[in-house]
Image (cartoon, rainbow, N blue to C red):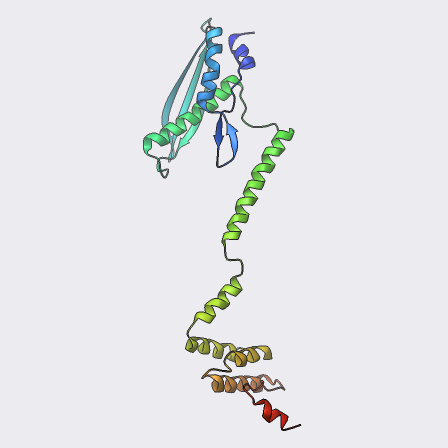
Length: 232
């Protein structure tokens, strides 16, 4: 067994960092380096990491190169790439390059020492991880739906009530002219029964009822109950 194989077998890099947003633990580049240093010393090996920046089309890319050299001078090289978002909000150029460098270095080290941050598809752990991510997504969507207005029609009705009476009257005339059922006329008459627009609404409703051939004329408002009793 050569030195690299021995380190790959013995290396244990714990996930010591915690992502509060995603609610999961992860390992960083520093975690891997701290774990591998004693093994490098034990096998008389060295590890050198360098970065190279290049532009691929419109994208700036950081390439991390990890070179492992054993006691016999045999070298093994692994590279990994990460894009740089130069205009990332809240970060200056140095921070964006540093973030991309750490990301690329971490995955180059993963490749060198056979560290896999993902779970096997067939494992329970994989499905638990996927389900947790899906549940978090559904929870976020639910929170977004709860923050939106729950009853747009009721909100629209409230807005209509806040309109000036004259504007509501003009809107009612439009609704009466386009009425497709008698209930629309009844609603208009009930709404404006105690306002100064009562007579105009009554006339508009009768005209629409005659036009549509509805047999029953719209009900009269504010009739005196005593007048009705006189007919009995």
